[in-house]
Length: 625
DNA sequence: AAAAAAC
Image (cartoon, rainbow, N blue to C red; front, side):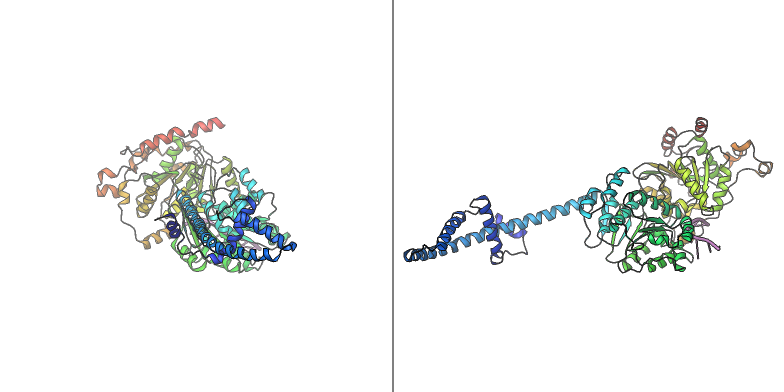
């Protein structure tokens, strides 16, 4: 097979038509010879042209006699024959050029395609959908290719953001092309920025066209965080970015319809629905609707988010409205809904769906009983830990109970949940951010989206109600590539969900006792029930009644604790002992000294490592005061 | 269970 055949094969499907391209070829040939004065195709065209031109000049001057005319006619016949030959030769050359160029083009296409695939593979970007634009590898590409405001780019670098994260690489170009999408990327991987940049680019300039972009978040804390981020990014551009909260509602009374002058609005769903019902807000100008933590907002139930979200979707009535849904976890029903309702949907997944972030060192810790939890958390505090630490419990009541138990430990502990006032909530968040609070006890309120810089330990005091909730809770640490640690207490009551969460931990590359993975899969019906009704737990209180009655002046270090400690705490769950799986029971064993003898070697090295790097709380108290 | 409105 010679080169010509090869090119022909590469160019399969396209035929070179000399008649069609002849004019172009002629022009090209002329351009080349005029420009460079060289005979590009070796057909004597350069000379020929000059002679011809000289003759033409003579024609014009009218100095042609009859004899000369005759000679010229003979010449013309000769040249016509010659030209026919030349034309055939040229046709061959042009065909060769055509196929060469075409194969170069195809090879280039293939190589670009390979490059794009390599980038996607390297960053574990999975996309499903038609005509997906190539991922961008730098923020400056956004300026050159998508007309991102240079000031926004400047704000980005001022914030220390230099290269886009995988979700940003792919989701930003998609939204820039106005594509509706469902994005799923791990906790702390930059989803917020992935939708903020396209919003700012899409709007281009501040304009009095009503609300053009709307972001929905499940909690006020997340809404205000997104608001802050957008304000920071759009600094100096003049966009009016507003959050719909109590303060803005109060302001609305004095300046009615102030939010109508927003370009971008961030809100929790119910407040928006409330305003919609009063006919006090107009969303018909919304061009981009972003649903953050989409699976949470799609949660069903009589008084759930889903209904509220549906009302918001309906209110965004512009035919031009584009929608983007983001979350770290993706429920099948959300995907189904997107496939049915979004226009030409693209779904983007970074890494494996519904998996925990790999930068968190995760542990499961058997604590025997409710008392065991309290003992274990006191132990963590006493042994010394590196603040800040987040402690998750399952209900507001239990949060209060735990707070009362820990408030006397001599550490800066506080509590946040939806029953506290907005003022209290804001204060708690800001003092936790500033480091004034070391331990923050919280409900699911803080489970999603909240970005605290450098949380060192997430403690699941109460077992999460699902693997998804587990993923979000532990995602408060190990953000933006930093490392973090998560400890999850469990008792016999938590057996039903142990398997699924153990699997999440295992998939993220952390050790898990073998027996857990061997558990039977629980029925999805039971799983749903568990989410609605978590196991009933006894009150958090280890202090004997007579101590409580007398008041707790100096005894706060836990007088009543030492005694029952050894007798009540088992280090191995009953369900393991019963089955008698000798060798496997040890991995999840007690770590951090709950009083029982350590039977496993697995967790110990980790424990030691943790201790070395942590700061003793007592010494910290002395040091700071 | 938690979250999301307020007069």
